[in-house]
Image (cartoon, rainbow, N blue to C red; front, side, top):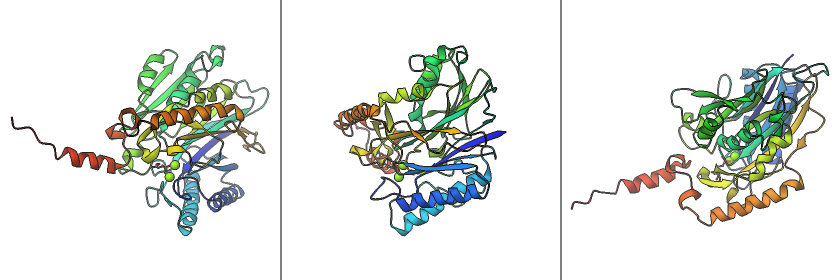
Length: 377
Ligand code: 13P
Ligand code: MG
Ligand code: MG
């Protein structure tokens, strides 16, 4: 059968500032997911949070961009918003940018990553004898945060030794979106390994260019989807960084989990952080971690599932970053973050003018620029 995995995530309110959603909000989201499983629309579903963002992962057979699935997610976020409003939480409904989207909710605020693929997990299936996948969710950063780790995991044998194996050596196609596109979705496809340097030339610009999806060149199987969109232009005004999600199939013809997560040991610098306007290292954390650290360091969580023949998730999930192995990286992230914060607002510590997500920063600068005048002599 054709199986669809949908990951839909939104910040609709959080406790004591932009930290995490409340237990009541999480319970409401879980109840809504269970009701939608009972109604038959979803096969299975899972709810977690990363920082202040609620993330729903669901399996179904409706295909990507399905109106009913997207509307279920929107309604679920509205229910959590009502609770956030009732209890006076910060930023109630923050990521629901339009009043009532009629069809799919892409571009309406929530982050969406979806994959559809043939699902027939039997031993004799040469492409996919079992299906396993990972869901990454990041808070306080934009979709470009995934550029480096996805590139390394899918294109660099220093991180993914599997690329040297016959099944994977044909490489992967990267679909890149220009997130500054004004007129529509502007896309370029590049192939690893032959376009390796061109990929690096584009993916270095994490604010403008993001990986939207990755496809296996062995047989065209979809490997990964990322919620990279033109969101910050569609919405017009600042509404928070895009706080992206990614859905990644692993094992077999795809990289193994360790090959996909090892690039996060870098705690690489990304745009986002306080007021969406700084540059700080991204810290791998357990699912359901609140943002409470120094200068709200960007966070990324990564959980894994197996999918049964009927489309059900395993009885539990695996939390890749909830492990002492990652403590050394978390310490490294803190040290890098403290070093960057030492230089406050200066130079590389803050994003360039056009990427300052709080438009007030730009208003301040523009107000001052308008007071400049040409010296008469
Ligand atoms: P969120 O997008 O996670 O709400 O963060 C906004 C922000 O300004 C962080 O300082
Ligand atoms: Mg928030
Ligand atoms: Mg957030």
